[in-house]
Image 1 (tube, helix red, strand yellow):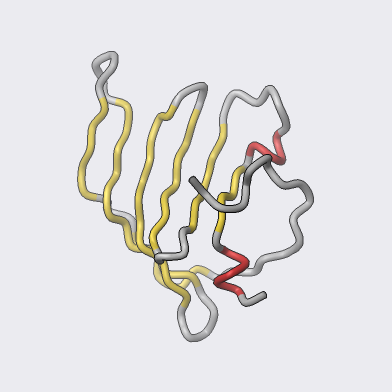
Image 2 (cartoon, one colour):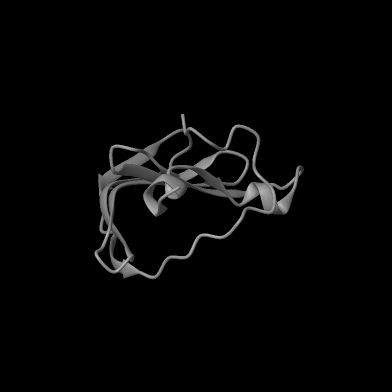
Length: 107
């Protein structure tokens, strides 16, 4: 399995914190080189969509597309262009200790 194939999927901190955890951070890498990051604390607090690619030296590059967060008024969500720019993030994938139910094949 190549590195891009290993990266594609739904990665969640929840699997390591265990059931009953009140918050989660998730990264989703889709095969079309897009993805998203989400932070939840009982509900979706913020989400950032991005395009991703692997550099020639194996580093991960992320370019943000859209940033959304819970608004100041109850029931509102603020959406704006993303300021996310990650250039050459060192990346090593190891064997997963525990996989979240349904973690492969992000939805």
